[in-house]
Length: 176
Image (cartoon, rainbow, N blue to C red; front, side):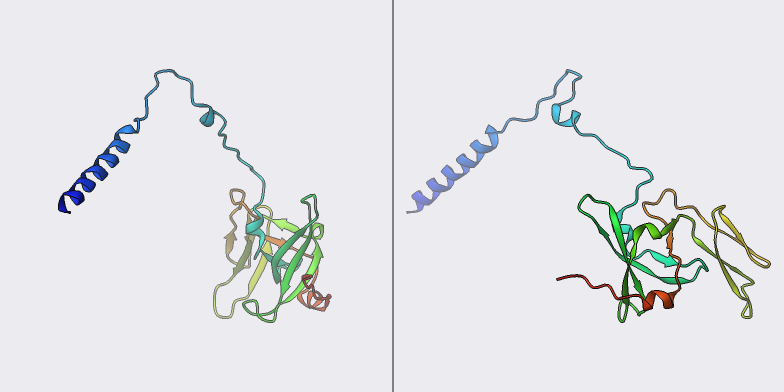
């Protein structure tokens, strides 16, 4: 009985060793041509394009630079063109938020950050301004904005409505 177990162990080891020796090592080629699979692999770059995943949560301001909500979703037609932006207005951490649908072409996207300037003291006021030149001036201090040209999404969107006007719009509901 012991001999059968030893014989089975030796035979199993021999089979495993045979499989290991049957594998051929990769060969090195001296010709300069690249393999066909590597030749078809290309890398593309899309400059000036925005990632849809980064658009969700993008803050929306009105023309007076008041934060009126954020983009919750983008709806597109069958050809892939974005037609509607769903904006969440009000609420806190998604609770009590009012969703409204606005035409996507009515949104204006801005790459420069909203600059907050002011005196910085306890009695100072904060002035918000969106700039296209890269700098905003306040009463006695200057805050500069940074361009998001290298990012894959704009800094914020602008929609010409107040927060109250958006809250009074019909609520958007996803169809079941």
